Image (cartoon, rainbow, N blue to C red; front, side, top):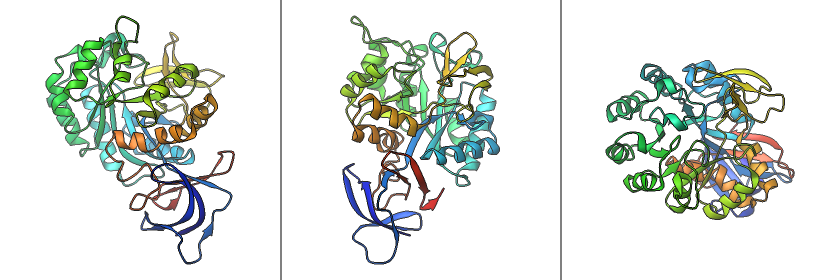
Length: 373
């Protein structure tokens, strides 16, 4: 397939116009290419978005351990410009998590839309006092034995795991697990010293910055402030305008710059379905008529019902520059899970995952591995 006259954001995220040749699902050549192709004048091409923290959408939940649910999520995401995702589990018992791992392993390569890039284990080794919408019944101390069993059952698909480093003797866990996947700190009441210790041990990521973690104040930076202060640490941000207010997002991006933020949806099965009552990790959650977010019955924010492309447009409306917003939805999350050589930008040798949008950033077409989704 040959796309002609493509206005796109290139490997270094600068705008240019060229022809793009796709062969066998991969971008084979970019430049002035002879031959007939599809004229893409008037549209803008963006790299396919990468959501590394998503529980579900369109009625499906990753933790259902069901191919039907994964099909719903994969198809829903493709329509929203997300071409790769990490299915994210909740804090659950070990047997259920093993079923989730196996289901994901068997599903990969059989997607109906967005590609399953990996698995994000959100818990179960987290803090009871910062559990948020996680089910406290299943919270436990981390063990290398359980992690290794889950990792093996997944077919080495685990790309991220969230832990609270202060609730168990986590030094050795972080040191060993970080050799297999990215260790993220979250759902944690860690002090600045405890957070820094975990970063020194090899943690390199923070789960939904500000949400369900010790905050920054003027006498202790907490987990949030310590993460911002470490240039090697990448930070997830839910940019629906509810989980983090626009003013805080603007200040945060000033600190993180264009290379350290990962926009995530953290969405659950209600995404795309509107208001109603739903289930998340064995708990009842509610999406109000305003549809801005999902909540537990006690009013605790439970999860997002947003999608990455809507959050991308939010960021631009909040005053974040286009390049930074785009990188935070594409190459940054790809790098966070070690797949930036395969996905996350429009470049030769990478997967032909491309969004074509009009001048108002309305999605017109989405290609995944060169095929129209």
